[in-house]
Image (cartoon, rainbow, N blue to C red):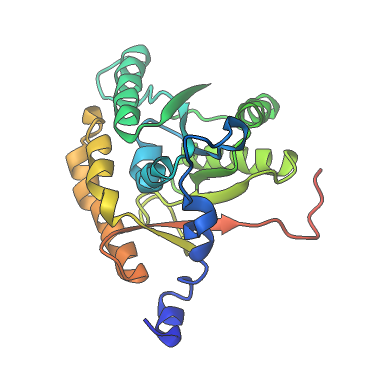
Length: 251
């Protein structure tokens, strides 16, 4: 691909090198000191959000030796018709644990209630303290312009933590069923997930309670192929990288 062609790929293929560069995917060795091992948090509102929206980058980062953590703001309490919150949470928590085993990542479950995401002083502090305790190098979470209230809540809490923790990690937003949930999503970065798409799908298939065959075939599959067309590969995930404005003041 010549330079002119590269610039035509949605105007963002070169920006994608930020996420795809050697500094991200350089493989850790057995002799790498633990304190230097890099960490990524993928923070979703519900069980299946991290896997479905960022499962490819999770696998690729693990292959490169990163510590990867899948964080769930809720346990999916309202996500199964005919089940109580307690019953649904137990089922969906186990589905997420099963998916994390396939992805080889560590799960963390937070305390918010599915369908009733809150933004207040206590919830801001909860998210900030969790992120601060994990000391990530990169965090991925929901794009804030989204039709699902829990997605918007999750995004806002993470964004606030990023600011109040002094921009100590790189922040990327992922897309969720763009067009019906995520809105006005214009990627800055792409990741070629062609080599790990089958493993990502296997992890997503763990979420049996969520009618995953329909969700994947009608949404995730199309998104991966479309982003792949944009990035000139078979399948890709797309992200928006947020950078601090030099004039920003932490309040």
